[in-house]
Length: 143
Image (cartoon, rainbow, N blue to C red):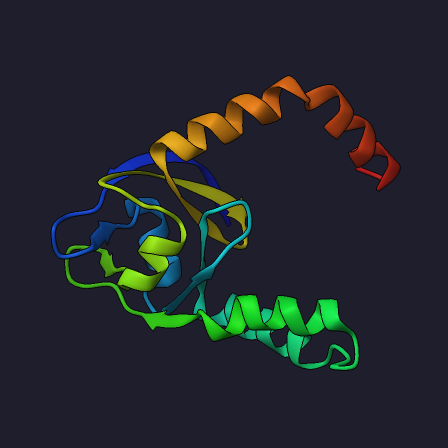
């Protein structure tokens, strides 16, 4: 289970250290892909496989399912951790999420999100302003 918020940096070789507490969960492999809201999603290979299997079962006749599958699958890349617990982010994904040197890694149960630090702070500020409406909507979903 991934939870929390962690500040890290991307080095000149596009290497990003994964928080130490998550390395064991990613030791058998990981997948990084384009996320939503201008971030990247990082999944353990097992969790990625479950998501990919669900996407493969969606009807291709619906444009939204095709678009979402393309977003998630076409931009995905297998990763492995090096001996220092780092992954190398591909340039195209780094550009997609506008990642600079300082990033925030957030844990969201079955995935990590990788955000540019400035974008994360803005997103968090905007979301916190609207927390009452968000909580109401979540109540409608039974949360």
